[in-house]
Image 1: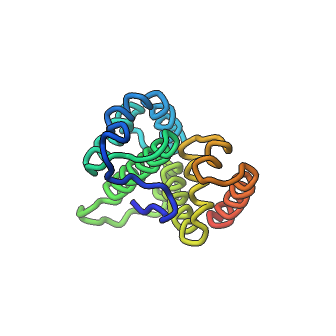
Image 2 (image 1 turned 120 degrees about the horizontal axis):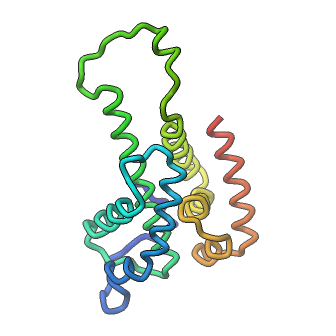
Image 3 (image 1 turned 135 degrees about the vertical axis):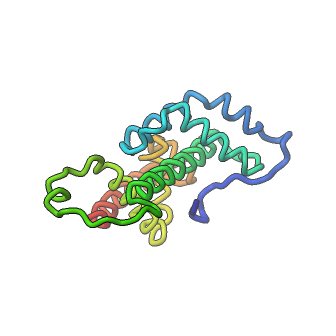
Length: 188
């Protein structure tokens, strides 16, 4: 998972100074479920995951990193949200690769059948396109990508994002508007 350098990241620190991962998950479980539900609703293509499964996968992924999450509750939720995003994108990519046959023998189909069959899950492609556009945005404007991740994916309010990024709420609002315009342009 690629995280912009200016994004608060987990770090190994003195366990006595901050809550453990288990304590953070227990204290933030309702918020994590809300974020997971929003993520799954927006992804459209992750039918094999439910809210609880996504939160559990997030926990396992964070647990396997063997580090304590430093920072405030909002920073923890932002990092967990990015982790959930990567889980969903990985699941969708795996699903698409299986649909494309993987290592199965390729057979040419009659184009009439392909043209007359509607795309069963156009949302999956949208999630992958959004992920690619967000990666492009992060390469050009890392702070704008952070604002999108925190606002759209983590569901944080503008004042919470401003607090996390240590800037004014008006700056976050302008970044959010600019990021929406840039993503729309990239996605077209």
